[in-house]
Image (cartoon, rainbow, N blue to C red; front, side):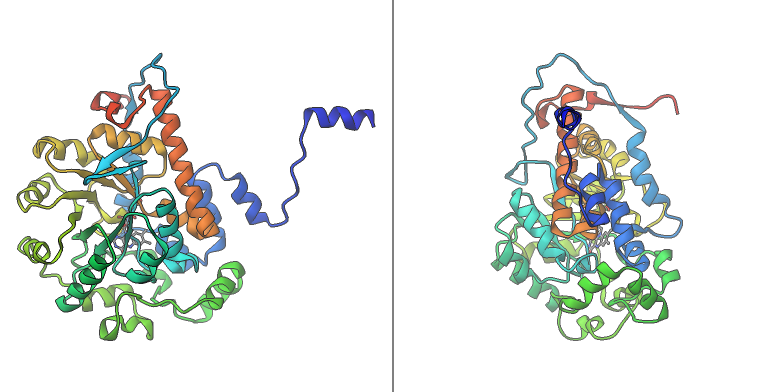
Length: 407
Ligand SMILES: Cc1cc2nc3c(=O)[nH]c(=O)nc-3n(C[C@H](O)[C@H](O)[C@H](O)COP(=O)(O)O)c2cc1C
């Protein structure tokens, strides 16, 4: 008894957790841990579709590595007892400079899919950008979210379809569109090629074995409604029924003739903000300014399109310089740490967006995983600000970072 009492006074006993995944999830310390949990839960083809990039994945890795080329110039003794991460973007006050990027086919990671991401974003009053290629519709997402909503547009050859989606989004209060302009054709994601990845996933001996060895995902997948392109019906949505490769689908439906002149077409039909997503050079950022878009997302589509495209973080300062700070900038790509967000803001970005970080959370544990991914990045950002000696987003200035000189 005496020994037990002594033990109790120095140790508290955790209630044992039966599920190994739940245990891993509870102990996950960062986004990479969520990624590993998702990797175990998802069939290989699904995980690779989310995790992979184009060709040699040079841009995919550079997006991450580039953050390590910058270090902080921390300041001390600055009373950091109150950290305020709120900021304004496109006329709206946001509690955090972290926004949810559009991702297609989100329900293949988890049946809760887009609705889970939309709910988490809304709970934090942060924008969620729904993809054209979503597996829940503009209407379904609006029904679960009272937070700010954006809609991402892939420009289809059938402009009537695009117009229809814009009208629906506008009538449901979506505040901005992100025009994705880095997808004239689909980047060659070689992991998908090797896996023979199709949408919806094709059943064959390989996928069956993958399914059997990942029972949690498979059980979740077969119990819920089949995956469809929820925003699109008719011929353009034919992948609903027949398995197609993503690249065949996109080359059939997307308009590769899209040009700067088309911005005016969108201006006429969309009263809200227009954000150009996929700007990858200083010259195009200047063109975006002259074409009157409201903001740009410096993005190489998470390394999934042009391999060898620059990392977004490296473009921010040159773009700010060339556009005289007149264009709000989103840094999109490789955000896996709160410190990455602080570095991007120090270079001159207004906000950051994340894709895989929340998808890893979703793939690991559904909505709880998305919430966890957000809260990890949020608390890392606050801790980084405290340790670097900045209390507000306005205090994050270029002098907070410098290029590492000894690499
Ligand atoms: C699985 C997946 C699907 C995506 N689908 C879309 C999409 O439908 N539309 C789009 O504009 N971008 C899409 N993206 C790109 C993201 O919006 C974002 O640019 C990218 O994920 C940012 O990089 P990160 O994943 O390193 O955060 C997708 C990215 C991933 C990983």
